[in-house]
Length: 170
Image (cartoon, rainbow, N blue to C red):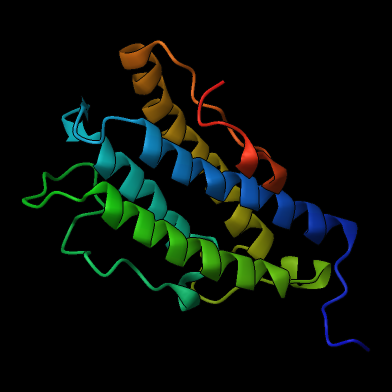
């Protein structure tokens, strides 16, 4: 053995597509007006909400780290916050989540994807990951719609790791 996990097609595709999903966090942070409001919350809070829950669920609650700047209810879209999170704050948290997620996924096998995880509402690892694809896509889609409305430019949406090299806009 060479010391590396033998990835099957499924876990390799999942890793590749998750790299694309992670890149979309970076893209919305760089392209939107973070202080513009959507449903009485600034866009930075919508992004942070998606990042927080991605961090919590994607790699299982056991591996949750959280942002250094987190305070009570910062992740809630129902409660106003007394602080402002900056582009730099979000990019730093993005880098932490990206590194943690890549490490987690690089060590998964297809058999592990089917395991039910403790403290995950009786969900498998695969269900936790797939659920975050839905959740993140919803919130980042809303943010991108605001950017399109403001700028007339369509933010590029990454699908795979190779898309990282694409321009920020279509």
